[in-house]
Image (cartoon, rainbow, N blue to C red):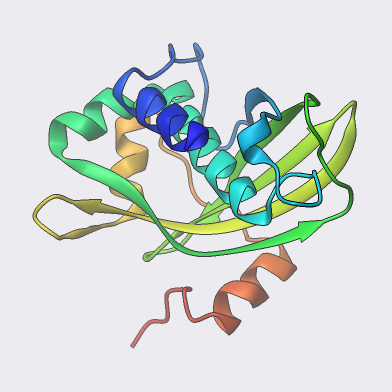
Length: 176
């Protein structure tokens, strides 16, 4: 429940934009492990990692300075697919960062990497295929979102592992 409240707060009251932040720049969200994040084995529950990633993605949007513009237009982000790999555990009270960055996009999705880092060591890595929808149900092209940033940029080529994952899970754009 704590992370859901944190997400609601970050969405309603976004943090201040990072001056000059471009769409491909990294966003850092600092967190600490709370008791409600833990499972019976006293480490962060795998589902909580996804909630933490939600908060970090909203902060990425805020850092780019487009959260308010999205809200005014009735546009919102959704996850089309995600995958996680874990190397170490996070336990009660530990401080860590979620480092989020856009890897690239196609006509259908934007692809993000979100790394959990503690004391310089990667703890876990998530890959997310995300989309933006409007309250009327329309799917938005990632370039419509990029226009809001004021930093028009072309998508870099996706890393091979991410491109293969997007194809395998049928989230990548395929021209007809």
